[in-house]
Image (cartoon, rainbow, N blue to C red; front, top):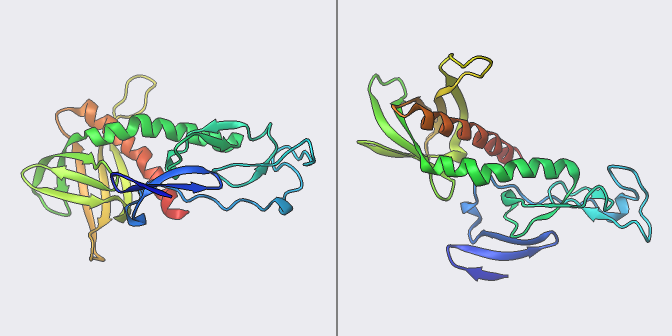
Length: 226
């Protein structure tokens, strides 16, 4: 194990090298824990094609689900940023397809979220709204809202997110996201808070930000339920 700058450390696990935060409390809210591998003695055959393992047919564990497969059913190496692997790792067919979609989220949607969007924000039952720029923090742990005032929402304290649509759509298309209803709890409080965010003047950028946030919510809930 060796330390590197920016509060991260390089660790070696049976699955490969991982770059993780020095303090586990600063893990990304999207991160997943490494799975426990199915013990070799409990998998006499491939868990996909049922081919029996022998001297020629070796066992391979999927780094995402931990199940045991033959080389044919677990030969694809795909990046797995949610587990902080430095290099692409071996995954089964089902897991590799999921991971490839997540790589797109990390490469594209995260940049959209950190770039931010402009929204008309209303807090709770207040009748007063404020134009604010909402963006995801660089460590993915907070939503920053900046206008005349500033406040932060910790992603792990969000209980629900509902994307609002404007109801209009091009022919054959889907309704465009126009806002978001966010429920969360502040640190040290059990009382739920509500934020209503509606797209500002740049509706195209706001709609892209909301679509990316919708995908982020799915990863957030999955990480929370693991």
